[in-house]
Image (cartoon, rainbow, N blue to C red; front, side, top):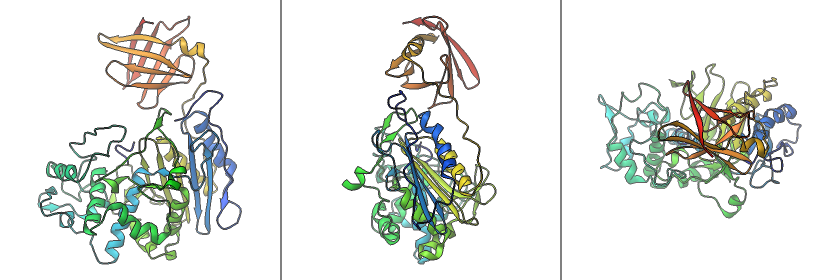
Length: 463
């Protein structure tokens, strides 16, 4: 999920390495792309611990091919087509497909107010006499904020777990829309979560059961689920946050339609194949109907029903991120090509990788991803920077060594890992900030924090 939807060790003994699984062709034909180019794109992400592992599906109208890199659960298992990941906001594609399928059956209409699907005592905000419709929610034009206004997770590591129906209705009643529904794009997890909840309520079932009955069972998507079986849990990749630290899975309740699904490269390849060849299943027509531009979006492109399109109008896509995972699904209907990339690290670089892999599938030679350099320092170089640095009275930056890396903690804030590009230059990955140490001697005499266009010097004031 994009708003709250938002890896791996770096010592020489356990640093990720490129260990691709064999590419598997469903059709039995050779892969329709240069796998060496694909591997070369992924290698710096693994070697710099930007991601811990990933699975990819390369899809044409003739079939699907799969590739895996890095680690799934241990240092020796490489992800493959059947490794499970949280897919975050890619769930929104499935939620919108539920709506498109109900519209085709004549059960619902895009211009139908969402209020009509909810209990009589639920209050959905409106503006200037215009109600929020199901189509507004799917096209991200509802006017609802990105997150519910009183979203205060009890557990930040699992932020949606305690947001149930009561919280959903209370937040709807407390929301004032800044503009008329349908007027302009504004990405909202709140909105698509409401759509999934309303569709399930209308069908007198739960969101997971509705997805299973209407989409995953008809399409044979055996691993696209909310709750894992024992077998699926054994294939579920271990998540990592942007600092390469293990991250717990997320649990979603009332907002499940915004990002609760887990899936595999194989299952997403089936969905992409249907988008490229709609005649393969009755749901194909609904999926292609979603890829019709209905509004402008804030990324320079547009949006249909639960799918974004690039500025050229060629590539349709949706991405998603949870606390420990990132996924991208993208396809070019005219070219008959699609790519899905799923990673067990919460890094937006997975999007750049996915679009680059789509260019490789086209036969192009994309340039390498733009990544800050990552150095691997010995213990002495790390220890030189350890210490307490005073930015201002009451604001101390404490730098500590944690095994083979450093963390930095500002007074009153959590500690975050800092990543070296040289013995004196470090950067955060969780925020756009850098640290420059004056480390000519045995201990750094000072550090400069570079953030928000400011350079804040801090002398060393403690060990």
